[in-house]
Length: 374
Image 1 (cartoon, one colour):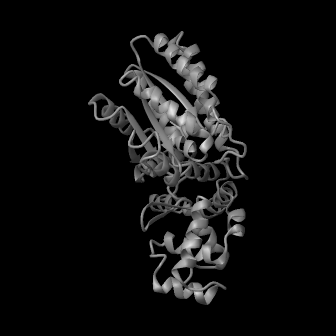
Image 2 (cartoon, helix red, strand yellow):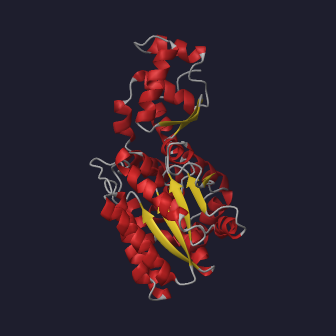
Image 3 (cartoon, helix red, strand yellow):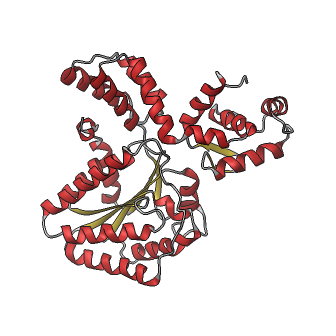
């Protein structure tokens, strides 16, 4: 069952963001949301086509394409765009190939996706010069078109000091081409997006307007309900679909996997849901993650997932009673440091924490039967 067939178009949202460019509010935007929230699908299947219709020349690169050498992903994307400038049909085929590649990468289940470089390589002077030269070539090939640079997982530049040269070079490159090259970025980590976009020492400090990528709503569930009923004869109550979407962390990718199971197996919703949750847990590596978490880390994570205060007396008492640690603020601070290092929790402002993997809460609670009493 082709995934593109189940893509829920967000045309109005794409036009809204492009309008931000048109009115001159900003030339650079950044979206942030956890993985598998539909950012890449939106960029490639909604925003890029809408931008092309408005006369933009779109260039798409994912910095997770080569986590150890993200500059190579940018070089490859620019080279492909230059080659595609020969005809409109080539540009459309290029973007279609990106859509297929993104879909294939989403099928790599049973392992945690590579988010960090294990052998980071700095971009050398020749690499950075090459990128600048390619952009110059693309400007000439684009003629009167404005170039729209679409970069997925831009926060990757903040995960290693080895990538600082590339980050500085990109910022300089874009500054020199104000108006001729615009950009849209996506990020999956609030912590690293904050480091990249909101830290004074970062070259991208206050460079792009940062937006929380909005979750899909009930209209997405209605879209799926209608397609299942009209095309496959599968009827599921709207309320049940909405609840399932919430249980799947409002992820359109996992919701489509649920629908795929319902359509192909003609099984009850509960059975399809259990199957999908097993796939989700495996893909996110929750079992491995849970094994590495100390008991106090679990308590702190669950408290944050419940929008609680990690330094509350109630939690400190539970830590004292349920772990071998002392129920003191220092214990919580060390747990928070471990959770942030593992990218399970992010801190944007002092005292403000966010969980990065909401599905982990369900997994941890399942392991103990229920959440700790509050």
